[in-house]
Image (cartoon, rainbow, N blue to C red; front, top):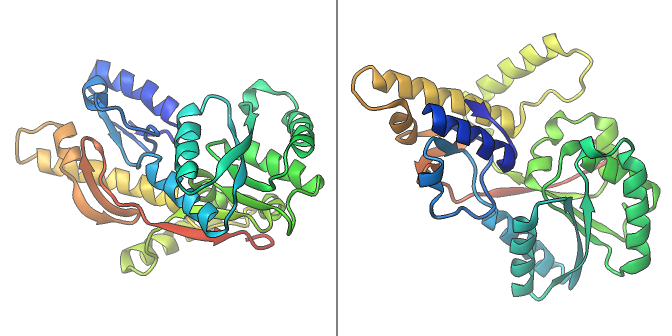
Amino acid sequence: IIGMHAWTEAASVAELGRKTQVPVISFAAPTITPPLLPTRLPFSVRMANDGTAYAKCVADMVRVYSWQRVVVINEEGDYEMLALLSETLQEVGSMIEYRLALPSPSYRTNPGEFIREELNKLIKNTQSRVFIVLQSSLEMVIHLFREAAQLGLVDGESAWIIPERITNLLDSVNKSSISYMEGALGIKTYYSEDSSEYQDFEAQFRKSFRAKYPEEDNRDPGFYALQAYDSIKIVAQAIDRMASGRKTLLTEILSSNFLGLSGEIRFEAAQLLQNPTFRMVNVDKKS
């Protein structure tokens, strides 16, 4: 089973994998990996890093710009990442002045109205105009920026940092939605676009995507397409190795060791073994 970009979903599916002894490759990992996770969910394979490197990256940006107070925006329930970021910010002399909790889109019939009310409260109760968006759904982030832009909070006087999970999806977002994010700083997983394998994949992807979705204006594959491609390659190679030995599919998956389109593919304790490199991007008009 391959998929899941949120750890809550990945953990639920991994529990099914444990009961049925089916490997589950997810594109998400817990914010802080519990020591007993491999024992509790032995069939969970995580093609993702925990939240530590991301929190340090955000804190470094805050330190460079000498922002002493920040506003954190995230969906309800993501308390581990909030605690990790708070601790990391304290280490660079900054603090969270205000937290705006977004609901899951499914819980609100009119999320735009709710966000507008919460942003008006924020304007009245805070001085900081540095906004750090933590884990959230793409749908809620688009609602958030649309309302914030209308209230004048996306301008030269404000700073916005959007998370890796959202920035990685911007390649597939309609350009009219991106325009609301003008000036935002995004943290994006770095991958090389120079290899012949990547360039071949990109050309095939764009051709296939254009044929299937001619009305879409963003046709770049994006990081998650590369991860999906690499995950299928992991399974295919593992099955090939099984043909010449007696090891299980899970064992062969965890022994993967190759340079994929999304980066180096190696696992330790069933989690991607990478020292992640991030790319900083700046939203400029519609790109």
